[in-house]
Amino acid sequence: MQRTLTVPGRFLTRGHQVLLAHDGLEKRWVALKYAVVDRFGPGVEAPLCREVALLSELRHPNIVRLFDVVTVLPEQGMLHVCLVMEHCENGDLSKLLGALD
Image (cartoon, rainbow, N blue to C red; front, side, top):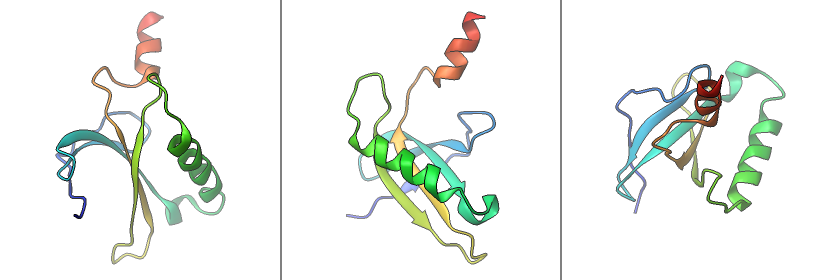
C-alpha cells in the first residue's frame, strides 16, 4: 500500500520546516520535517544523511522515531526530502526547555 500524507498546514516549530501531517497508511498523526535540498546549496546532504542514518537506528522512549523518508521532485526541479517522524503531543524539547527559563 502507498503512504498518503495529509498536511493541514499547521507548523509545529519555528525556524525549521516541521509540519503536522496525518499518515493515511498507519492512521496516525506524524511530524513531517522537510528540507528543500537545492535551496540550501552544497553541504546540506551530509547532515541530512547523518540525521536519517542515526534516527533510523535509534530506538529509545525519549527519542522520536523515524518512520519513513520520502523524496519529492516537483516541477520546479528542487528536491524535497521529507522525514516522517513520530509526533510528540507536548511539542519539541526546545519549547520545554525555554519554559524553564
